[in-house]
Length: 287
Image (cartoon, rainbow, N blue to C red):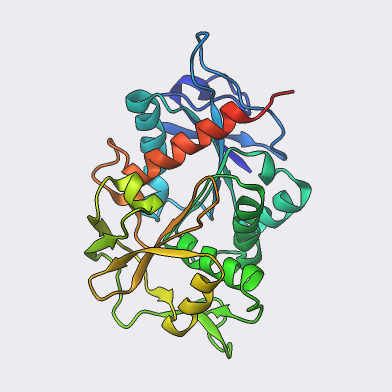
């Protein structure tokens, strides 16, 4: 587990301090567990600092990963939403889930960058968020694995697979797209009354992609019959947003909101996750 800090707290050489605003981000020392309760900002009425698990295999070659420090800074500076962020490699996520460490975060974000080093770790992170009511966002590969976890755990489809991880599997839930969406920008239409519409403030949005895989249409009825809502579709009717009604905040997008603009103004979905994390921290008793 790696702690993401900014210039203002990196110099202290400590682990687990809040991520605060600054001009650039550095990587702090490794943390073996995630037991420190969320702190609060200065002032009697200030919002609490929320702890967020960034689950993914961090790489300087994945643009969405390099955007994270900018987004953390912008959320704090522009919106007063301070996130204490920890990177958790998918190879470690299973153990973090089993130990209960993941359940002590205020939000879990399953980031792009598949194929993940550990499919099982990625799925474990989704499962913790879904079962424990922890705010969750899955983007690109995170969307794909959120659907995979739900199909296996909630829909009675334990054998479904992801073609990128297991191309020879007999029953594929996630398959290669007919047309790659790498570098693509397209319109997404959002269902009225959905969480996605509430977050976006519109029924139509234009989003950026960087992916080659999506859900197999023949399995979609099973997902929706068991409670998952496919609340956003492209102009061909293909699902691009999924959410889980009844959960405090569970949203997954095939597009990458991390790529919105230049990173200085977080996408509404990223801002909504941060707000949900802060609300979770405020409602969580501290030791």
